[in-house]
Length: 136
Image (cartoon, rainbow, N blue to C red):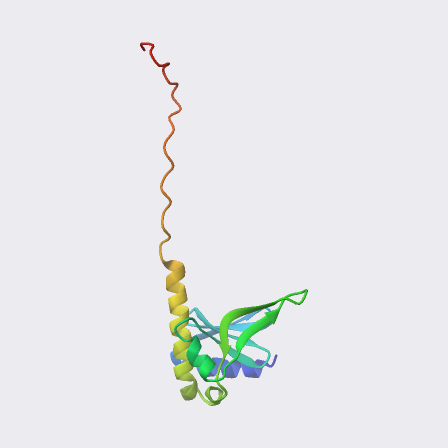
């Protein structure tokens, strides 16, 4: 993968905040303000989507990030390719990058939301019980 392309993707996202690039799984993850919003695989930038943003990416003709497991099974992540025209400049990328950031923030909020606590189990006394009908 060309480092120049990864650097360009970082520049495209930079107006949102500081971008950190991390090598991962044969590609690169891009973090803005330490929030994972994009990944680069091959020569494609993929942006985070969720139920609120997916339709906009689909309407723009973007492609879902898919990968193949050993053995031939396919998997996917909630990332779609950036629209072609958004790759031309940071200004054109900004609406899409903001959608990705919003999706990532919603995903983070869901992960951070408190889990329902299980009811504590009934306490069992370990003290010996008195036999029924016998005075203690």
